[in-house]
Every structure is written in structure tokens, then in C-alpha cells.
Amino acid sequence: MKSLFSEVVFTRFHARIIILLCSFAAAVFGLLGPFFQKEFIDQLTGTASKLHLFTFNNPLWFIVGAFFCVLFAQAFAQLTNYLSAKEALFMQRVFAERLYNKTLNLRVDTMSHRPVGEIVSLYATDVAGATVFLDQTLPAGASTLFPLLLAPFAISVLFDIPLWPTICVMIGMTVLNTVMGFRQSRFFFRFKLLAAERIGLVNEWIQNIRTIRILGWIRHFETAIFAKREVETRNRVLMVTNGQIMNALSSSVTFVLNVISLGSLVFFTKQQVTGGELLALLWIVGIFLTRPFRQMPWFFTFAFDSWTSLKRLEEFFSIKNNKTDEDGREPAAMTRDEAFALQVRGLNLRIGARDILNKIDLDVAHGEFVAVVGEVGSGKSMLLLSLLRETGASFDFYHIGDKDALQATPDEVRGNFSYVPQEGFIMSASLRENVAFLYDIDPDRDPMVEESLRLAQFDLNTERVEKGLNTEIGERGVNLSGGQRQRVSLARVHFHQAPILLLDDCLSAVDVDTEQKLFEQLLLGAWADRTRILVTHRLSALSQVDRILFLEEGRIIDQGTFEELLARNEKFRDYTTTVAKEAAANKTEAHNG
View 1 (cartoon, helix red, strand yellow):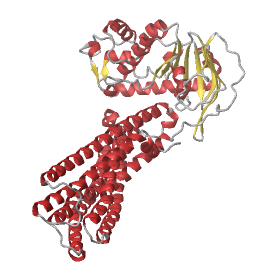
View 2: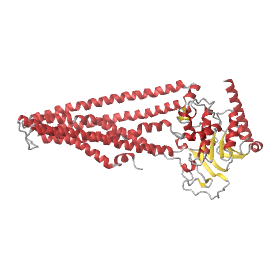
View 3: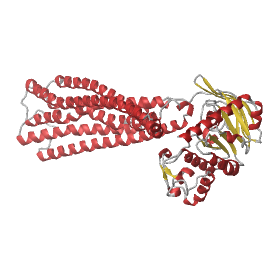
View 4: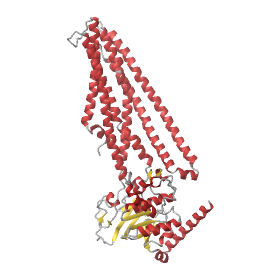
């Protein structure tokens, strides 16, 4: 895989060359200014110098030339910064789009051990940090390198003095700044890691704040966040201190260079020094080299910092979805049956060393209503996600209607389904937009939105939504109850009219009366002709479905109607007894609470 660093350097390489040429032009014009000033002073004073660069004798031309040299130097310096910032923004867009697409393509089982805070940190910190090479390191490096290379040449042209004292000081400061810059970059890197950990902790706290408050864990989370912040602050103090030391060193180096250059001029020159030459020397050493030496430590700091961000992004981009056994394997020879909306053979899912789903064979007829039950951890939710191609599950055979799902892209597969997760996803938008899952939806479609909500037992007149469909719902539905979130999700499924519905325990937060109305008007009413697969722990639902799949440790150990399973399967009877006891205990606890 092409490294991100080479991508930053060689993408739109012509633009990188233009940036370097602009920086070089700024350095050249910056050095020409002292030459013009030297000639101006020498002609005004009538002093003969050993070097005459120009033949015309009007001093006014020299002061005009010096003015335009300074003007062009500043113009090219600003152009360098502008082009660098523009290229950095271009690469930020490239990396952000790649990070977005990578995040979309990683499956649930691959991302299960990665916190949301890590992705947030990559977007917020490392995408911008990776392009610091363009908007900081490249212009700072060029505006440091070219003056340091050209200044000794200019001094050698103007004066007959040895360059080794000045060059030795420049080399010594370069080595010292490199060490300080590397140390600063380590503080920056640790700062980003600590910030990412803190963001992840705060994100977890905010997402679950109501549950944390109910469970009495607020103090625990506050202590953890404050402790992380203290470590982050100590690192920041060290980082700022090191930065101040770098600034102090880089600010004082020009004074040292002035002393050494003037000393060399006094002790080594064999000719009388003119006023123009003295002014030119002080200008080059005291003014022209000031910015390069001040930028030098930050050049190294930004270079190392950009490198760490590039490596963090490369590490994330290199993540691959868990391998499946179907790669390189011939599909099973099996004839598709048009009577079925869904046909699966040999579905297997392994995460780490654990078999989550094992040899699942499944046929679901058009319009059939199937319930999936089993103990916690038996693989029910993972079965639905695997049908959506959201896990690394392998299949011997997988057809959706007349389409071979193994030959289709994951997006094409998902286009056949509507899915309701356990939590019921709610975005920060209006109620209308949450049902339609569209921003700026045409108000002409309001009747369909209202009908979807009505069938989902979400009454606009009684559900505390003062502005009706225009009511703004907070992020993650914080101003809705669990039951309301689930019913909005069910309304969304009805609105989008997908042929196959995957419902993952989407009735767990509604009361018994509402559940029965949902069955009568929606699941068995408006959706009677649609294929439905319902994961549930509600025993009241099992007698109303066409068929039940009973899972144990990732296998379908039995299937049939509710009455058939009760009559023949002792494990199923034990399961229903356990669920009934848990439901009764929860009801008693809620009543006492």
C-alpha cells in the first residue's frame, strides 16, 4: 500500500514545486534588499567598496530597488503560505473522505473493540494533523532552508571573511533545535493520545448519562475524567515549557550570530569596511535570519507531529474486516426456490476463537412472519446483522428473492431490508425527518409520515410533541422515552416500504397494550404482505407469528409454531418458563418502584 507520507508529498506534485519556487523567490528577494541598501549607503557617503553590483549612480534607484525587493519577498512569502494552506485543505478532504468510507465499510464485528472516541479523534485531530506537513512543515522548512543556504553565500560575496564561525553556530543551533523539536513532538503525540482517551470517556459518559445517573455512577465517571484531564494538563505544561525554551533559544541566536559576524569582520577583514557593508551584514544576520531561526524548532516539531498523525491514520486505514471462509470458495450448488423471499445455507460466523453462528440453514417464504428466540448470547442479533452483510459471516448459499446476495455488494443487499436495532436510532432533527430519514423532506409527504406514526401507535396529540412533526428531537432521542424511540423506528420502517423487515427486539420498551395494538395494526395488519423476522423475548408475541426459530449457542436447534415447540422440545419449555419468571420479576420490581 502506498504510504500516506508519499501521498502527501507527491499528490499534485506540481503544486509542491510551485510552493518551493515561491519560497526560494522570497529568499532571493529578501537577500537582494541588503545589496541595494549597501549600494545606496555607499553612494550617499561616497565610500568606495570592493564590490559594485550596479553601474548606475543615482542613489534613488537603489532605495526604490530595496523597497521592491522587500515587497516581492513579502508577496512571495504570503503566496507560499496561501498555496500551502490550499494544498493542505485539499489533502484534508482526501483523507476525511477516505476515513469516512473506511468507517462505513468496516463491519460490526471488526469495530466491536474500537471505541467511538478513537474515530472522533482521528477526524478531529489526525486528519488535520497529517496535513500539517503541507500548511506548516513545507513552508516553514523552505523558508528556513533557503535563507540558511543563501545567507553564507551572500556574506562571502560582500565580505572577505571566513564563514566557518557563522556556519558552526548555525549547525549547532540546527542540532539543538532538532533535539528540542523532537522532544516537543513527543509531547504533542502524547497530547493527542490523551485527548483521544478523554474524548472517548466523555463520549461514553454523554451517550449514557441518564443510565449513569440512575445507577449512581456519576462520581466514578467524573473521577475518571478529571484524572485523565490532570494527566493531560501535566503533559501540556511540559509541552508549553519546552516550547518557551525553544522560542527563547531561537530568539537569542540572532544576537549570537551578530556578535560572531561582527567579530569576524573586525578580526579577519583586511580592508576598510564601508557603512553600506556594515548595514548589509547587520541586515542579513540580524533581520533576514531571524525568521528562519525562529521557525526552525517548530519546523521539526510540526514535521514529527505530522508524521505521528500520518502513522495513526495509516494504522486505521490498514484495518481489514475479519476474514470469512467464503473467500475463494465456490458457492454451493443449489437451485433457488421462487417461493422463498430469503434462502440461506451454511451461514457461519466466527469472531476470535468463538463460534457465534454455526451452520445456519434458513428458508423464509414471501410474507412469512418468523420469530427468533433464544438465551442471551445465542446469536440472535448477529443473525440479523449477518443477513445484512454487516459481519464477517460466510455463506454456502444466500439468495434474496431472485438475487444472489453473494454476488451483490453489501449496499445492494441492504437495499432489500429495513432494519430496526434494539436501541432505535434517533438523529438530532425534527420528528418528520426522523421518520422519513431525510433532511428537508417535502411537506407534501406529511400525510404518509403521519400515517406511519399512527400505525406505530405514536399519537401526535398525546405524545408530548408540542410542535407536531416539526418537533425537534435531541441527539440520540434524549427527550424521548425508550418506547417512543422504538415506535419512531417502526414508523420509519413503514415509511420506507422495504420488502423484508428485520426487527431486533423492537418491542422491548413498549407496554403490553401498545404491543397488542402494534401487532394488530402494523405487524399483522399493514405489514401482512411483507416478510418479517422478529427477534424477541416477549412470549406474548410467539403465538402470533407463523414460525419460531429457537437458537442455542449459534445453532438453530428447533423450529416450528409456538404450540409445536412447547409440545416436543423440553429446552424450549424451560426457556419460556425462565422468560416468564423474569418478566414477572421485572413487573413486580417496576410496580414496587
